Image (cartoon, rainbow over the protein chains, first blue to last red):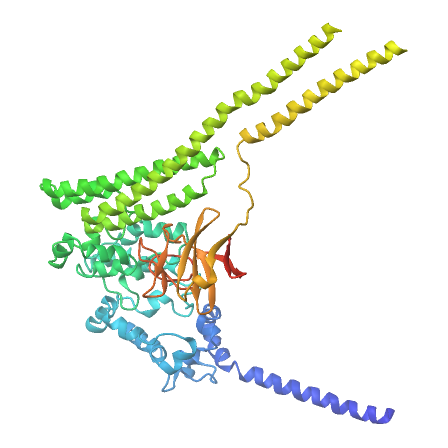
Length: 409
Length: 145
């Protein structure tokens, strides 16, 4: 028994050594591509290691081809070696995988980026005018360090998009060649959209690509502005279509939403817009300014009535009155007042008045409830006098009665 | 001895009368003070409210009920009952039901939510807050969040 154990031991050692050698050979063979490329391209490897492509298991050879077994520059001397020396080549190299449905399906990625890109201003400049300044895939996504747009460090993550676009669109010298303004990103950073994106970290807030598109980036024309804004501001768009402005916009007389709200530096809409924007076109038309005053006046009246009611109900709540039902009425009134703000896009007093009237009724009901509660509270305070007086009177009577009894004795 | 006993009885009665008066005054003062003092609490934090009989809800029918002063939308789908805060996560309007689309709709900016409260289209950035809902003895009970 003891002897057979001794005989098996060398055999086991051989097995272990054999397995180790096989593993070593496998480890050496598997990363041959990286090791061979890294001999000269160590810097790229550092960037690549964290990229989405590396995470997907792709190696240098998958994009660049070449012979990974060769350890010197002759590794490039193959038919499949690719190192684009112009931007068109870059777009085509990326598309060799990203337009391949079979390759992209496992990652759930779209395959129409190149087609879309060719319809964009960037793509037109590159493919039609061979303009090497035009942004191509790598200008926005990076080269070896490409990350999924879902990764917060990605150049295409929503909060990083303005910075990515500004790399070209804030370059005054470059933009001057195309007669484009170089302050669009600076303007955007002052906008309400940017406030939502950067301060509230609302990732659904619009960035450059939400309005202009990404791969198919094209500035919306005058006629398309409403459609672009209407992707998010659906109700406003729908109501605008019913306004007298819709006809003027169709005739190309003004640029729908942008004419009143501005574009890149758009601010949160307020009633001040009526004072600032309408006069730009209607300064000499008292009739149209009259419509403006009537619409703005109606909204202003309901907004201040709502604010007054909110303050009244809040005050009552602080004083300890039961205002649950009135809070609900306020919520309902808020719904009506907010609807008014959207409805004004129709410029139709006929549409605004019923909503304003409904809001007024709700607010009146809340205020009537609160004044009833306050009246009851006042009555309760007045009732304190007799409540406190009664025991004092009783005490005096007891005392007098006691004196009477004592005197009798 | 007899005189002493009479005096002590009188004193005892005086104490009783004075004590009684003080107790009476305190008994009066305490509720009056608490009645005048502003309310510090809103009552129970979690409130359960009836949304009506389950049998009265047809499939795809909704109802808005007030729970703790907040509107809650109750929906009956083929999977059962669901309840969500009826306050739109965009600008706080009260949402309604779009029977044609079978979606929760906000009348202010055309935001739509599915029957699980998740935003489907339009500007709402977040889902509607989910509320507890159960059927107890045939009654649909909605719990505050």
